Each structure stands twice: as structure tokens, then as C-alpha cells.
Length: 257
Image (cartoon, rainbow, N blue to C red; front, top):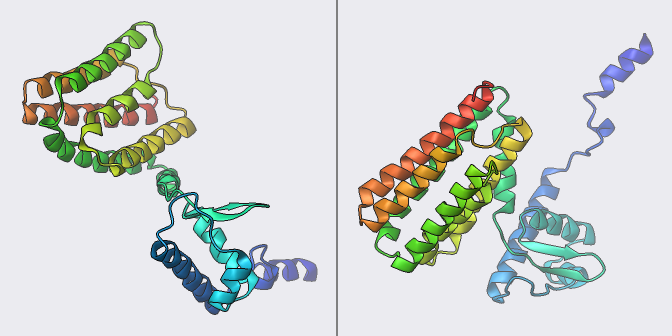
């Protein structure tokens, strides 16, 4: 009995935790080092792939221990701000949106029993983004770019008739659509949202679109409206497209469709 009480009591003892608690001071030191490493990258104008000072050099310049430097670099690596190549050194990372997509995926899946609601929130944000961008891109698309978009829709239709899923073609369509804006952040954001949706679908075992012809029609409606310089029509077609995605996710969560 006494052994059991001792065991139960140890659960609240941080000394028995497999994850040792870090002191407030340690967290503050790590945060300071992270900020200073980021400032160093900015001050030196270092690009992705450029080498950073060695651990020893960072220790000396920042006046901290090797463990503190390593802790801070690990945190920055998780954010893709730095890349640690074991045996070679530390380099400037890509600063991609991968950590954002990872966090958003976890947030969505962590909503126990309500992942469709969480996913609907993600889709709403993406919808607002794309509908807003539609007005900007409507006047920027050339006939050649519209032809390429239509070609992607044709390939979607061919895949659907052959019974093949076409999520990658869907992604290609949206990336091509906004490419004329020349905004490098747009495809990264759209890619992050797309990745979250595919990951959640995969974990929940949701199937591909049960009505591919509807997806094809909605994408074709977007192209038709853009060719006619009908911005409102293109925005409505995009909104209909997202309503379809939301409805599909809700159906799949109930085992319908």
C-alpha cells in the first residue's frame, strides 16, 4: 500500500518527470539567444543556405554556454529559421511555412469530436484569402494563362472520367491562378492550407471527392467568369467551390457520401 502511495505521489513531482522542467531564467536565456541569432541573420543579410557562426563563436559573442546555444538553435530549427547539418555546421533555413502547417494540422486534429468545425475554420480563412485575391488577379491573367488554367480543368475532367482522384491537379489550378500576382507568399500560404486539409483527410480516412464532375464544373465556372472579366462571377464560383469542400468534409465525418 505504501509503495502505491509513493508511486502516486511521484506523479506530481517534477523531478520524476521524463521532461525536466526548465527554469524561467533558462527560458529567457534561450529566447534572448534566438532573437539575437535572428538579428544576426538580418544584420548580415544572410540568405537561405548561408553558413552561420559556429557554436563556439556564438558562445563567445553572446556570452552564454554551449547548452544554451544548442537549445536556442534547436528551437530555431523547429521554426525552419536555421538548419543544423550534423557534422557540417549550422546554416540559415528556408523560413518556410512548414511549422505553420504542422501547428495548424495539430490544432485541427486536437479538436476532439469537432475536427470538421476546426477544418471549416481553416477553409473559411482560405476562402476569404482567395476571394480577395480574385479581384486582383482578374485583370492580370493573359489569354495564355487562362488557356493553361482551362487545360488543368480538362485534365481534371479526364482523371474524373477515368475514376482517378486529382487532388494535385486541384492544387496546380490554384497555384497557376494566382501566379501572375508575383507574390511568393501566396502559393506558400495556399500550399500550407492544402497540406492541412490533405493531412486531416488522411488521418480521418475521408475519401476523395465523391462527385468529381461537380469539382470540375466549379473550376471551369471560375475560368469562364475570368474570361468574361466577370469578377463577381469568379468570386461566386470560388465561394461555391469552397462550400462544396466544406459540405464534403461534413458528409465524410458522418459517413455519408
